[in-house]
Amino acid sequence: MGTYFKSTYEYTKLRKNFGKQPLFQNVPAHILDSINPDYELQKQYILRNPVHREVQAVSPQTEHDSNTKQVIKHEQGINHTEGGWPRDVHLYNEEHILRHRRRIQHEENYVHSVLNLRPAMEHFIDQNNAIDMYQAYFSDMEPQAPVEEYKVQIANVFRDTFNRPISSIAWTNEKKSKVIASYCYKTYSVEPDRNQNNICYVWDVNRQTSPIYEFSPKSCCWQVESSPVEAEVIVAGLSNGTINIFDIRSSSEPVTTSSIYNSHLGPITALLFTHSRTHTEFFTGSLDGQCLWWDKRNISKPVDQLSMSVRYPADEEPNLTNSEGISSLQFDKGLPTKFLCGTESGLVINANRMGRSHSEILTSYWVAHTGPVRSVHRSPCTLRMFITCGDWNVKIWSEEVRSGPIIVTKPYRHQITDVSWAPLRYSCYMVVAADGVFNYWDLLRKYKQPVASLNISDHGLTKIAPHPEGESIAVGDNYGSLFLLHLSDNMIYPGVNDKQLMHQIYDRETRREHILDARLKEIRLKARMEQEPSIILPEETTDTEDLEAEEELYFKIVKEEINITDGVFPTTNFSDI
Image (cartoon, rainbow, N blue to C red; front, side, top):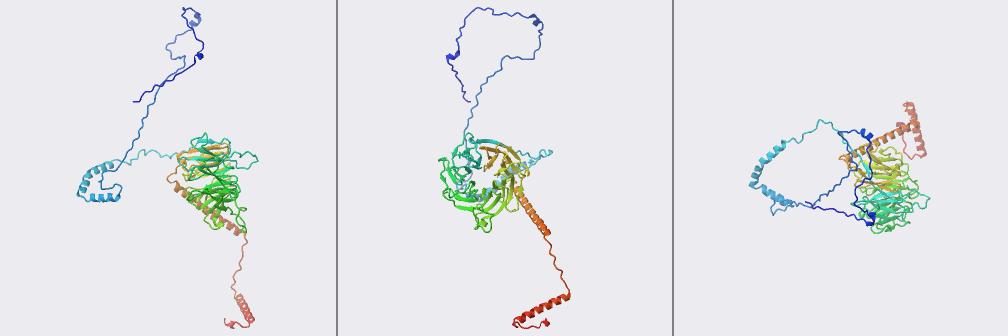
């Protein structure tokens, strides 16, 4: 029984705050005033009996004291060991156990022991068979389709005091992940103080009052990424084309900085870590039209360089003058030598670093959008399928189809700023637009409209970054607000057959595009044949006279050639031929 604790509280007040001291005296009773009754009002008085009304002149109040019960906790563990074995038999040695079982099975008492257990086992088996385990209850009720409720809610909001647009979002690779956000104006402006503050933040998802870390790049930060091995190491790509590496454990200033002479010529628009044994290599893309590979242990100069030139004259070599400006990059560990590149001109380039020549490295490209490709991501279901966004459309592509996308959504009213696949649910992807609406699509449920939409901000959304486990989604807007969204379970975890069904959709749409492409080629060929004038071939003649005339002409030519050569060839009697 718990001990009772009596709670007391003392009220103290100064004597001067009591007011004037009252002085009471004992005086005899006397009448101060006398009001005589009004007989006219007394005649109107009616006695009501019974009375069903209660009148309380003062406000009701109650007081109640309670004390919660103490919860007593204690830890208790169970140590389970398998017993019954002899000392010479080791429990975790399979050979000892098999040898002991064979020795017991060859003993005479083994058969009698099994026969003695038979009646009890038959009784339990008959008892179990007597129970109808497969009886169907409520079979007369009509089956109803399961209700799937899609919920998207804002769990937290992290605001920038300077109201700068969010340019990039990244998650740290640790057990309790944090969100890294960079802020800057990506549009060139004549205002000198617009990008004066370059501070970026690291936020704790459970603490929205203030960031836990701050770091200050040397210039406006366009891209930011966390090291896959060390969560405290942050790589930032700046607007002047350089790279800054931070260690937030030591200082907010960059630890190392790349040289401006060996870096990009324009702002860094994409930054991703690649697959390597040391997990220190990453590559960047910029508007200058080249990709640079770096090692964060030494960023004085890049490890490798590649110009993204796919459309250039035959008499020119690929260089920065004819390259395509890079707007986005995609890399997947499942394809360590390949990556996708989205350009400012609306192309998606398929690159393979194992190629020997420039044409073998940049193997193919797709004309995806009218304008920059803002984002490109490979599908977690199959690496042959990828999604892109740009202008007002979201398109899903297949590497096997060069003519066009296999799935196209209807155009949005506002420009699409970013898109991303759901990390665990293979059939879903998320879209953010300039109108501030977050859209969640599921290709297995609805093909023409999103399954869930939420208006998050009035200032337009810029970036989206889902957590690798899919439970949280980080979304940034143009006013410096970082929204943390939580999804319902049916939007996070995949179904049993989702991957198989998505493979069927991919194969079906790819086959349909192949059929449409072949049919389109047939129509174009038929139209070309109708436009070209038909060639009329002469009819073959079987007249004997024409044949004889041609034969005589042939022999005449042969004789003239023999006479010219002065009889070098042996003479032949042509009449005998």
